[in-house]
Image (cartoon, rainbow, N blue to C red; front, side):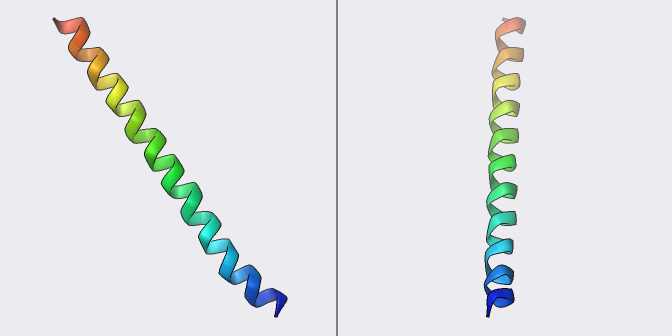
Length: 41
């Protein structure tokens, strides 16, 4: 039972970490992009 719960929880944790990283990466890219536009103008 406990092993089964771990298997169910761990993928969820991995997915959360993956999405958090993806969102942070997208946000950083967006900031970098807007900064590049500002410096060009």
